[in-house]
Length: 517
Image 1 (cartoon, rainbow, N blue to C red):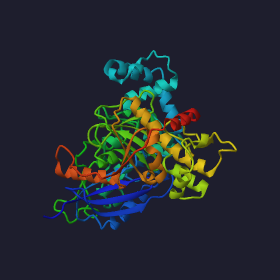
Image 2: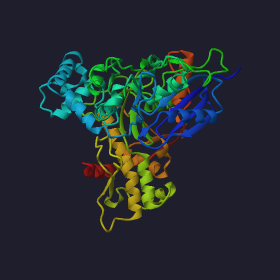
Image 3: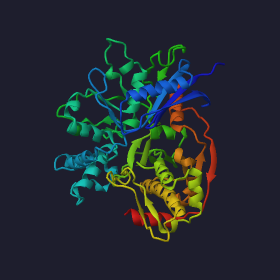
Image 4: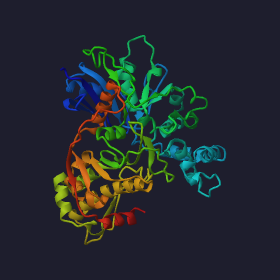
């Protein structure tokens, strides 16, 4: 019997990866990868070129029956009425819109909008917390954050798309007035694979109404409520010039395994009868969860460019401290998560400072002791999202003439990374999240030092799935699901490489908390 092939695409911050996969078993057939340019503001055409290169490396997509795109969340792609990109996309890690996030928060807490949101929460949605009382003595910012959480599950930070739209409206008003559609990186690439944008035939309509997305990625915009499955154009109106929010095209939000479009046969499925379908795709965190086959009680900690602690939940999450984002997952459930801007690059900074490599960092750190003899790294090199400190910088605390050694500094860099992820884990627990299993993934999980100290700092055993491209696997699994049309995604094995064990070492985290403040 001929194999049925599907493709999973990971269009991440750093690169594009294409995984051609056998649909029934999840077996890897072919793989390709191409880099993306560095920076926090990128021309989307770079993603398209990387996709083409990665697809070619993977042996082409002519024999692929379904494709799905998982992508970096929050990136803002603005299209004009002709389907042309208006300006470079601002990515999730671009913090220039931090003042706009603050402004949006304060405006929703104002005497008109804020009270309306609070009243709606009290009368219609009592499960969203006792803080919905509009007569609370909370300060303006906290009232605003809680109003946003009640509205869409998350409060604006510089990462979210809505803040970037607001920045464009404030700083580049001509560009703002030209906006005909707003989409996300994975939405745009799916749309191009369907033959729109740069691949459109000359003289054809731009096809903006054919844009589509999924719940997971839409829930990271700040103007989509995953609990009610609808866009909040009233909130988007706060970020756009007057009168534009109602006419701007937003991608259709598809069900988890609904078919979004057919791929242009020049791009994929040329040799497949009926062509190649395009699944909804999703945000990278949701695709990682799908690739790991996560269930309720599982928490993944992903150490990539960013650090993400995510848990599958059967119900929406509303964190009234606004630290945990109430995103949707790629299966119809929810994916509350806490995200740090700084993750594996914390280790890279340590390597550069100490003039060593990953194995060398581990060897140095092993010669130190838990707590690095009193040294703590607060690792906010690029500002931070959790906690929300966009203007912060990294700092070393507790240095003395006696303890300032290469071994202690190495240990402090590793512990700083893990303690920042422990912060995220504690935030999820505070919401009532059951944590029965921790899965550690991402490039940072390959570090011998991270593996050595993760169980002690996180406070429990840690399972280490075999290093793989789990965003691309999740996307491929979704593509196979859309192809079958069945109620549940296909069951693909997840190879747990090892279980990391170690006695809990609470003193390291407590030392970190004292300095973090």
